[in-house]
Image: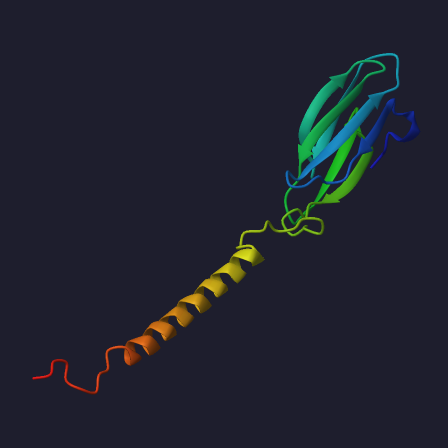
Length: 143
């Protein structure tokens, strides 16, 4: 397949995949003195077809599919200017992300344990005192 190579008036930069949106940013710069037509292809189908004025820069965002390698290419006059394979792995990518704290604080756990121990001690004291207090060996009323 012929390429535009150095004769192309377009300079292209294709970025890495951005998560969580699975997007790739494509920057196209026209270095010629006239407007030029170009197309951005993803896996062979046209995603963006546009005309760029002389000396201008266009930034376009294309979506790629999850867990699959997608070829992003820029063509000028049906000749490829630049292409890159991008692989979106956004669902499994969590190196810098931590889960939010959803459980009780450690102080809350200590307070609940202390409350449970206090309730048990109170029950033991009431049970012991209840066995001691009402006992009488003699009759209540002497006759």
